[in-house]
Length: 342
Image (cartoon, rainbow, N blue to C red; front, side, top):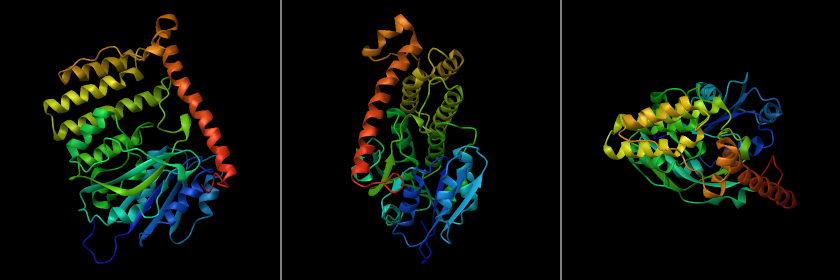
């Protein structure tokens, strides 16, 4: 990403909020990067636990730590970026981990400044060694249009830490949207990719993505109006970014499918937002149908209503996740893997 003989400086930017249990391991994974030139910037977003103290224990010439009143992840990322002198930006959430050669393998591709680099990612709970890497529809090198079509068409996701973006492209797309409390990363990287020359996927570059359950920022609570409104704003923005570079029939069809898939988040409790989605679908030449629940939950709807049925649909996975998480935590303790160093 640079024509200079000196290796580019990579900034590893970490927003943190109440992450005391995880952030030490995250910082160690950043420090362990084999790429020779790096800076690490941690911005504590008004944590009420020991996150700031843990982060400050790593402060050095290579690791800068700042704190600010709680404003949200997007604001913390903007602060970190304003402090960075880096040529290339690596975003890293405070509970995720980078493989030692993650950045080096991506930089070895030698991509131009307008090409975005992505990596493979695997999910884990408490033991990084058990991370499961399951290829998805975005695990490919793609044009901006094709990447966004796959993203919306499959409702697919790439964690924040998978990306490596040049500073020039980062500056070109502007700041993270601080109005978004949910899916701010979906909106931001859709904006980055729409402005890029394309995505280069580096399969042997890896990220370990910690599954921290329903408390995770990306979890959607269907009763949380702030998150629902944020998700809607992000969805509308992503549709807009895609249509700005390609407004073909294929794109419009995929956008309608994307809206249909997410309609259940709002139906029927928020008829105002449902109407907004239906209006956009009509503009795209499509029509949104009432959402459908899986058969094992749909019987609840006529007896107790939509919200009860949707809550029950969420309860099962939450219970299973809690059981699996507790078991994995016990295994981690037995294996001598501490939460702060796993």
